[in-house]
Image (cartoon, rainbow over all chains, first blue to last red; front, side, top):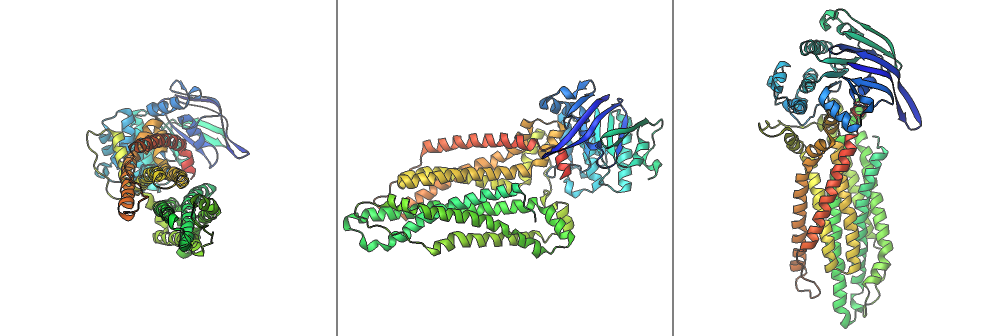
Length: 230
Length: 377
């Protein structure tokens, strides 16, 4: 479970201090697919960063799977990310000099996961495992990024605009694949997106506005990206 | 083309290298040319001393000045290349907006300006030091050597390098601009080319990253090797010059050798750090420790570094042996050059300490680049 209480975060640029999170509190249950929605600049990516231990919050408390992130030092946060968290970013952030297999191994190595070739196959990248990221399409690169995250066997998968750089059809396929894997493997997934249609795919929806949570609700039935029909 | 203050600082590094090289060349070449003009006035009993002083100036200028200048040329070429590779996206944006290749490329003349500044400072400093050097070189029976301003040195040491580097930067930019704007925007030039090697089954993953990092960035590996080559050759050669030339000249050359060798290493590490920022950030975000990132990514450059150091040692030994035994054969004042084992070990120890500290510092700095910062960029 992810529990955030009165979380604040601001960024300093010279003498200008910009508050990005203004006392955010939320609860995401174990095994849920939660979607964080909001316009650009609403603070959703910052919220994802502090929930995942990529950045420290300035104030408030964050507890993930019983571990208090607010009390952790840098070394403990690194260890936390290693054990618990997987990331999928909009820009993929694949290492250009490593092959598809090498990029997936980057995640697998941390979890001592020797079954990573199965993930590569499952994501339909078997025939591309020796290719470099530059030789892949955007959708394929994002699938490598997902494979890398899953190879870590994460308890929680954080996705920051995973379809932001993809066309509609590829984006739907990627979202459906993530939702399917999340149901099958039972990990918690927290996805940031500005696409309002993605809300119908989630168990719970958190809407953000200007650094605050504007609305939260749960869906009784999850829909697939293709059922939503955006 | 926007040059940030950070890029400006890097250009200061280039200016310092040029300043040091031109500084050495200016006062030694100046003395050599002026001393030649008083050949007829040298007393019979001071002829040997006179020849020895000429030899000393020529030797120092040839070995130090020209070598340092050559080193600066190569380092600058690499820096221009790295700078352009790192700004491929910005160039792509300008090109996409409709700027012509020539118009964008001409903006790169600014690299020549940094060379110009360095050369002017070096030339001015060298020229200002000539009275001191002339005083040091004087001796009983030697006529007073008049200080003359040599315009040809100004042209050779200031104008020629400036024009050369400005032209080189513009031409290189033109060459890079041959790529379509879309490819530049995607940063395709930065991506590793060629097929990755199929990983060895039993090789640990971090060792695989170590070798792949090195394999994918051959130019950078060469740059690191070259910087370490310079470090090794310059420092060992500078110390050896203290025995072969006069103490003052030896001290000057040693001081410059230290500045330049440290500058070379610094430039190399700045390039390593900026080229591997994404790799380290992604590894850090996934939970790799700073030590693992340092050892697997930045540590991989230890191989070209050690090779560069070794080649530098052999090079400086070979060059000094060549100069003392072939070029200056028969000159009585010329001491026999022997490989200085203690100096080798001292320089090696300094190199290992500096390299280790640099890997640690740059790993720490690179590791602090958050994924969010990369996303914002």
